[in-house]
Length: 509
Image (cartoon, rainbow, N blue to C red; front, side, top):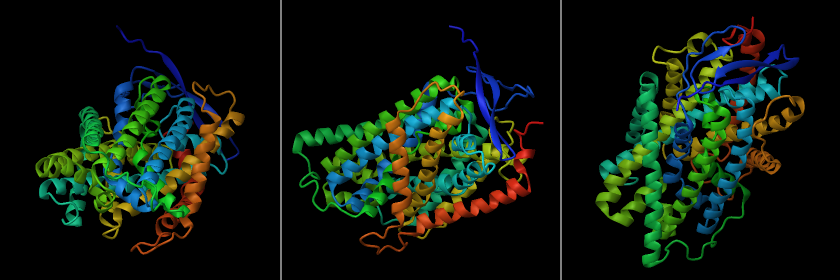
């Protein structure tokens, strides 16, 4: 069947001197790759290479990363019991679905790449571009690179596990060196081999899904054969302190993060109004089901002590117990390493698009360079900057607690802006009634997302029952908050003094 190009209007938010905001239109072919601005008629260079299944592969590939293979032991240590650990994973799935539904309305209402940058600019036009600017800098300098660094480091953990057959005895700096190589590899693939990188992401996504299916199948088989090991007194030792659950939820939400990946690169998605909701929600539901069942499988095969002692290699210990040394310590850890590498590829793709859009909005210095498109049809300079920041996060945190610290520092600004974006959604239902909303989020989904954001932003500053770690409990949220405040100063310089948006790629003449 021949594909027909259907014109589709995309709304772009234009701030007018901080006094008001208006919506301007951009028309493009819903199935093709040519985007035309109504005023300039200039084609955009990035092609629409993503369809429904490749878009869903990016969502699933971005979600399934190091989290499910590495955080279960950290979450168990935080909440204190197997039963509550399972409850937290289910709760994380419910909250993630609520946030995903809200972002489906935002993405179909304002279908332009950039995610929260576009939504905050539309909902909060005063002070001019403040919140989108702060979001972009926080995401580029804290949220995205810290998460990519955590995934890259865990990729190194599993490759080292496959090479040595040991979980925690090998050098942490060797893991970090492999993590640096992973970040460089993903950047080169996305920078010079765009279509091949998308195909590789899809293949690695299949590997990740099959690994989780294998974990579930092994747990089911072992449970039938010998019963459960980790579900004795499921709630014994459950923590009652709120900070324990914030720590656990940061790690659970880190594992579930990625359902908004297409919101950041929607300019490259064919027929986004139809494909965004299907790909985002479908990918999340598939992953959430596999996550909950995989955690149950861990506790069927391993006892509670084994999960606690596994550190960030719990999946490797699981397969060693199930299949013996050869498969459990060599083959499967290699596959898990490839799976987490796929997650870094998907994350680098999304992070570079946020930086690319921020540069084209004039939020960054050297915006013409950072917002440029290479002859390989990729934002090569934006990719290089994202890679550099990721490497900085890989090599700078102190040894021992680096992985947990990276998750916590990256999770704080993520939930701050999730909450603000959904508040903005409610504001735009009144201030922009004329916008077409192909999908409308449920009120309960919006309420749950906002309430969770408030909880995740306030409780990290509450002192936990025990604070005997090398890094103080307040270090991650305070560092993230300090950077957000610094971003406000940088906003004044770049937007108010230098008037960057007025000289941007998207400036109207």
